[in-house]
Length: 632
Picture 1 (cartoon, rainbow, N blue to C red):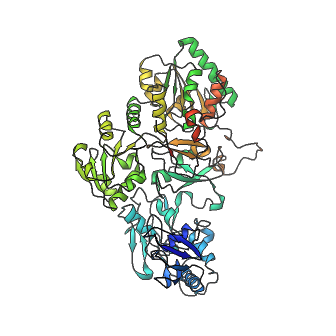
Picture 2 (picture 1 turned 60 degrees about the vertical axis):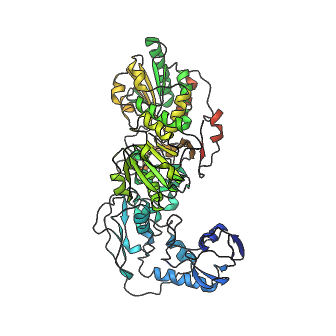
Picture 3 (picture 1 turned 90 degrees about the horizontal axis):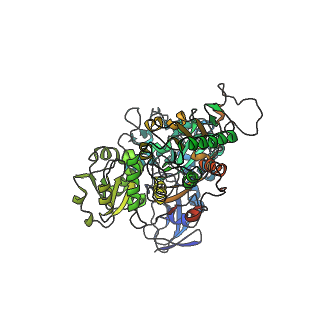
């Protein structure tokens, strides 16, 4: 390991580490635009200048392109290096429009930060600025090319990292242009990462345009709920409205990036049709009245149809805190059925997959990115777990071989991710024994039990895509408590009442049951049909835990207070002129607290903390960490 000195601090780094990365290790931040940990170095922006005072290299050097070498003595504060950085910033600003007051990047812009930190505060250039015509890039991304400083991050991510082909760099010298040959919607399912990766305001989130500054946002570390991978995100809200979602680094899971489904699915949280107040027979009521009415109706059901005529139903999207309380609720309500999956096939396939995973064979996205041989079995990655496609591409870029068994034969994946895939008829035909770090990816949406078991017996690390953000925990708890599917329960004819806890239940099953109570934050079929509705908080309005598809427990924090957003309170766009202790809908509870209140009213023990027993270790899980693996 070479040892060098940076600003009088000695540091040992692995071979191949750049001076810029070495400086980061000891807390020294060198300005940079083009360098990104996921993309590497290209030396395009020239703003990371340092001076080598002694050693094998001397003079002004670009720290992102300079490998650390034994005996180097580097200064980031040398007057010559500082002057170089100041001049670079000045020439980058020559054609910049200086439109910070109207730029959505204001407050989170590296160009702003480095311009001030570099000492460039007086504009000397008086010539005519270069100008560009912006392009329409779709409903999600705003394009403002005049702010570009030619760092090439966008093109490098889109083409090299994500494999997109409809966006890139055109022109030369001062006419360089980053965009499409013709205006149109960006085709890559990872295009939204341009917003995060651009160090200036060329690409901004159009869905949140002109809504807030960075310092106005309510933000907290969170976990994406839109598939089973559990990618790390940072949602940003203001005035009880989820405005945008940003990727958050988690090296074991999504790395630096997220897919567009996770980034641009805020409409569900902001849906004006969301349940906001308790309802009894379609009439708004208070929480106590609604809970008392539910207890009364349950008693009437038991008197009329007998013990065991009620089904308690959870789902793979119900957070762990609520899922672990469902057995206690079922016992308190004298329910005859407990279910974590409405559909029989989904529950069985998920349970089969989870039963095959251990701490040794479960593969993370990081494992996929480092694999040298990947087999994809009965799985549509782009539909079931898009970030797996991005991880697969990173392995392919490093030389991994890709095989597709069944499914769509890999055509869609090959075109979207820009990879080469060998199609085979059976998993047995894949030469997994030729690779040192093989991974098999299997979907549970369509794969049968035999396929799921064959994948586990293939002698490689395994990735199963599951049906929801907490499907892994749902399968564990279902097995532990002997739960079945709702479809089977209704088919017996004994189910006369359903308590649906954030459960997506098909309308045909609901039609066969005379009484439905639903606790949810989505306007589902169960909510529309329920006689009693108990609104719950969305995941961004609560603290909670999800177990992703590999069994990795990750904690997420509350981002915003529950309640109607200010924008939705009045048709004229102004809050009502009524003094309140809390906003309309601000008394909505997380699902686990609704369940706990029901358990107590039904005569069960009071629940103060849902994570107890085997789950107690997760109470103090670091929401900004990589999470912990949980396996039986």
